[in-house]
Image (cartoon, rainbow, N blue to C red; front, side, top):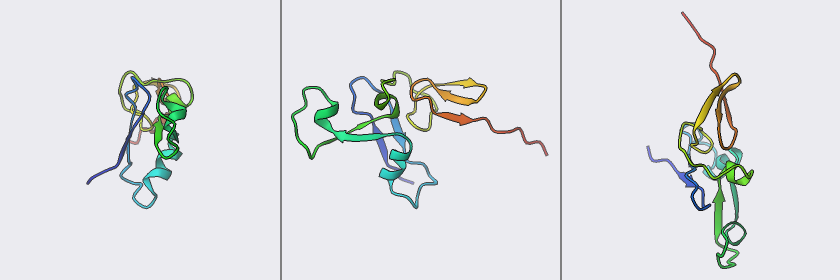
Length: 107
């Protein structure tokens, strides 16, 4: 299966968003926006970029919130940043996305 992907356009950011397999019915753009990705004119995001209103840049959730850039990749489903296992669940060090812990299910 071929999936869409986004990378953050900020310098030095390693953020990556892969289209979830279960998102086949929704558009990739809407799923990425729901995950916290931001699309802005490139001139507003990238210093020194010529002001071209039709050129867009993508910002990961961490950079959009001022907590980026993502420096270390891991398992975060929103930005592919590294995570810490906290009480609430697997928490991204960068975008702060929390993947709740699954309850142990024994047969």
